[in-house]
Image (cartoon, rainbow, N blue to C red; front, side):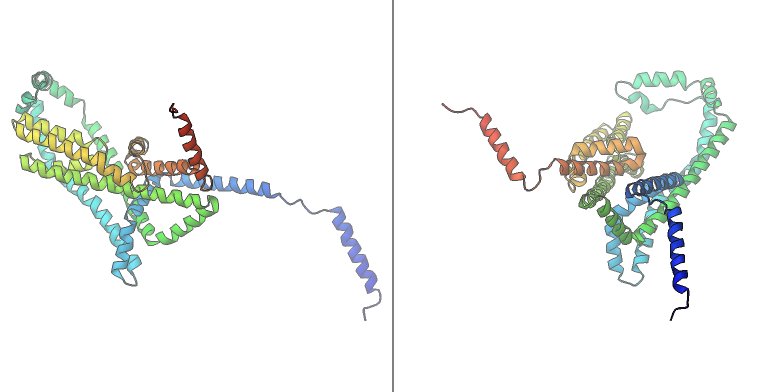
Length: 398
């Protein structure tokens, strides 16, 4: 049994709550549209702050992404080949170490060579201050411009006073300042390269999980179209790495053999230089043309002709047949857009643009084809209408 007066107290309490709720109404709930706008503003602000925080390392992250996409099939094969419990950790470490060695060893050898030749350079500068710079014998042998080049050299560089005045502009203080600047730039590049290798390792290590999350995000935002565009971009990066880097190194290897055959000095180094230049479109002809001119100047006319003809054939075949097939074949990217993507990316993003440019062009071409191709249910109707239009324009026979 409830206590006497309990019902009255309960009634008075409920009446009091009703009065309070009537006096202080509940705060209005935000509408879904305002929540969506606030969420987008917060996401944009966080992305802007994050990009600003990492803007010094964006190049390192981009290079790491290119390396990871280009070498991902090799990482998968190496993981399967090891067939151990720790293979998902060992394979990324081996590939990352291989990337580091491939880039660090040539730089170290170049630095050792520069340090070894530094005292010869200093002695050469001292002799130039005292006696001037004598024109090399092969300069006069250059066709058409040899005599003019020799006269200019003797007038400007053969006089010791002119050379001393020219070298005097580079004082010790300027040299020390430039050295400090170069050392700081080298340290900065080394740190960025270390972060690139570190990022490559983690991309190899957790690439499957990252790819799955990116696919989920793409499906949520763009649907099936986003995954198709990403596939086209990755195929373009694969094709660009194969078409630019491997084909360029192949050109340098073949031309290095030709350099050694015709007796060009430092054939291996010049072949390596040609291979690096061949990665950039239209840069390899400059290197082998200079090599041919040098052989012409020293009297090796046959060698110069062989280098000019063989270099032109190799570069023509590589640039007009092999590279368009490797870069554009996987995504059906026309050669013109491949070339524009490479050159535009190189102009906008530097050396990294060689890989970013074709990927962007592949995404744009994929969007263009998707937006302009007729839907499957309307394709037969459009084909029939096009055929009818062609027939109607044909002249009728009498």
